[in-house]
Length: 268
Image 1 (tube, helix red, strand yellow):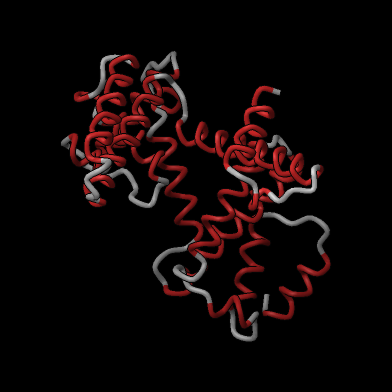
Image 2: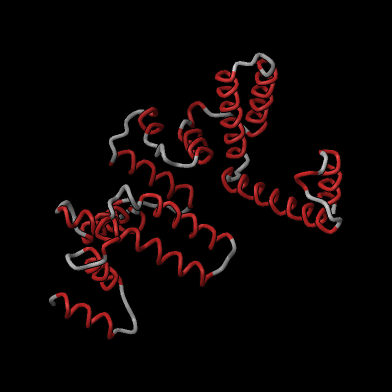
């Protein structure tokens, strides 16, 4: 089909599939297409990919299937967008992406597509990691640690690094908790020295220890921190609403007044 035929075809449809989405992106990026879409590069839409991913996560967290459907579509658009840019440069096609991921899934599920036995999730994950390390030729523990994506959120990255360094891990959660106490004491020792660089280092050590403690407890540290942040915002909203009822501005109230409101709402 030529350009006008593709546009006519898409305008007449009521239901669209993955191929239609790829065709729309092709039209948007082609000569005579959308000026904005034609200007974009991997780098210029990088943040969009991150934002759409987090919006998918938000839809999952609030358990809204209709919002999830919408946000998954937005995320899929980002995948198609990046793929189209590479297709235009002649490096690979969308078919190459789907071929690679399908081949990867088949290879990493030998208990389904081969004769390997894996009756538990733990065994499946163990096989997955072993096969992945073989594929990537990660022969040392350090190579597996360095393969953790540097762009991951810091708390998530810390947990992944700690897990992969299983040969140098805490034996249990109690031991990991003791490490937190040790790091807290080190911060206390340098707190009054005015050495900001050293303080930053020790705070990093403390956060890394907290991430490992959460992991040893079977807790997703990233999720726990997000929930704690949301809880803070919710409680702050309550104390600000209470202050407004009393014709007060929280930004002009004393710390003592705010603490009293905070504790009252926390108890409630």
